[in-house]
Image (cartoon, rainbow, N blue to C red):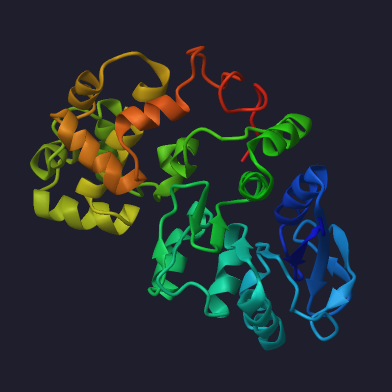
Length: 336
């Protein structure tokens, strides 16, 4: 079988793990030929100073024949998306490619090339608001580690590129090959949870004033308690109307949306770490009924609570240890 051609797009200021992580996954799987293209052939400096040699420049590499196009991210992406030659080459390569993928903020280059219209996509949680604001044509969902929408695959930050690459390998070569690669590289074949598993504090700004800080603290202290605007205003010592304005201004989301996110995260932890029935978890986490929890999970995560538990629960009950008999390849995850 002819090896599949993977073409990575890099630029000055790229994130090196966005390139080297997926590259190692494809190399370990075999059946792939990996190439690197940049605006010009030669050394390309990453954000950390690591130099990578791009054999090809966009002027000398025919975009035809690309099986999978992978666009990396990094701080330099904002400058790169102003590079007309690079963006045009990405658009041309994507037109004939079987698949198009981005790692982290590389999604902004896909957007610049006009590849996100109507697509559900993800990126690093820190870029969520910017992506949604600048590209309303895309449906931005920054909880998943990676998202597949047709032939367009997008992933979250840094090491999630390896999760994405493993999924692409599994799509091409089957679960056994992907599992063998994951074992070799000491990775999860299916990393538990989404980006919000890395702490609620990451997906929202931090409160700037004591009254809002008090309201946020009350929510986290007991997600299942009553947290309507009147109750939160009592904690904050403000009028409900004043708190609504200040909370939204400081955290970027209104109180009700913040409460729901905290409750969803609490339910996710309960589902994966314990044996309580779904009905009991719904009550303890503030959803009142299992049906309300089910609807919220479907809306936010695209899966039922029972299915989420079946897929992600740890049979050991120990934080940070994942059962190797099911879907992972080791008992160690990566730092994100």
